[in-house]
Amino acid sequence: TGNDIELITPHSSNTNSDNSVGATISIGYNKQIENMVYGLEADLSLANYSNEYNSGNVFYDTAPTKTFNIQTKLSHDWIINLQPKIAYAYNSSMFYAVGGLSLAKFKYEFDKTDNAFNIDFHQESNKFKLGWNAGIGMEHKINKDWVLSLEYLYTRFNNVAKESKSLDGW
Image (tube, rainbow, N blue to C red; front, top):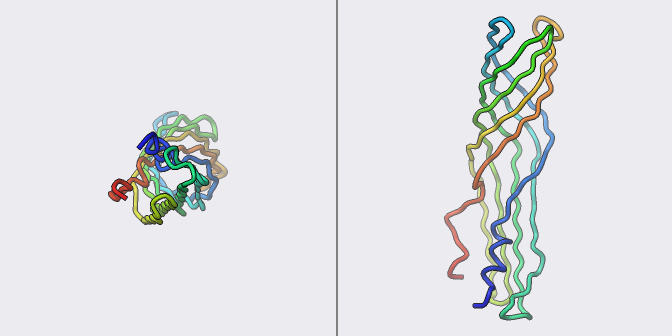
């Protein structure tokens, strides 16, 4: 009743977004035609990503002495990327753009406690999720077989925590 549902919705449907730093191991192949370079690369990125949310005790409008609390946690340890590369080579350096598919295994936890309805709801999942990535970077050739690389890569996974269970009908 009242606007209690409007109180719950923003706490149970939040967006997890964060920057994390990690280490990446890449393998790929490039083909150069004059100054243009075309390639394909695969990489494994290792990062201990974790994002947590806690609503704190939120009071109901229709039962001002009663509260609910929602907590979520989203985490992953690795991402595999597969992406084509297009680049421009100049002297011993190469400036490039990449974009492709990403795969990660996410762990998601959702908890809701509610002293108005004596609810202790817990949901947990571990699942693989397919996403996408786009980035820019620069490589500098150290010798015939080795390069030093600096890259910014944006990776996105939509609806990671979307589950079939629902809080409707507690």
